[in-house]
Length: 181
Image (cartoon, rainbow, N blue to C red; front, side, top):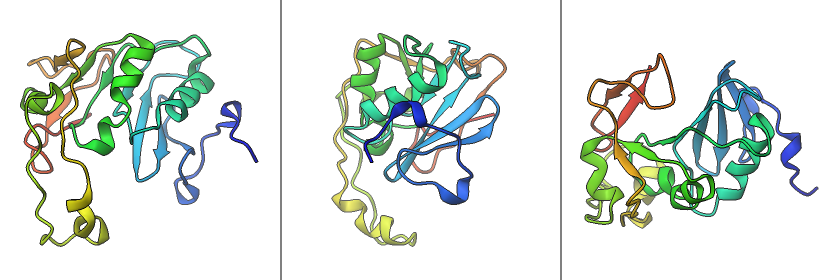
């Protein structure tokens, strides 16, 4: 059966597969994109929303179709917010930022990896963490270049386009990893 963007429905998390939307809160919906999730923060059809992370490479159409289904065909986010710059979270960010003509925000410590200046260090495949940790040496570690769209998250902890939300530094996975509350 061909993929129809107008058939996106929030699914229970137990039945998630790539391309499925799942509701976390009334204003937070996730989309599974192969091995990762992206989140849409905003009420349906409101036209006032933000994309958190940008999934795997070549997932622009899947993400854009899900956004159109949830927020309307001509809707675009206020911004794209990145938790960090690994390939599975920025895979389609350049194409999506250009498609929607929106700014991208990330923590200051992620900037070298989001401006094309520096490769991520190679991962330690000896850490415990299952098959993904063992395969991590095969994943790309090259940076993306989001200039001139990339901006640093505000130092006051606010999240652009997400009133009432805060970003919290949660280093470990990367030095500039952030979470939201």
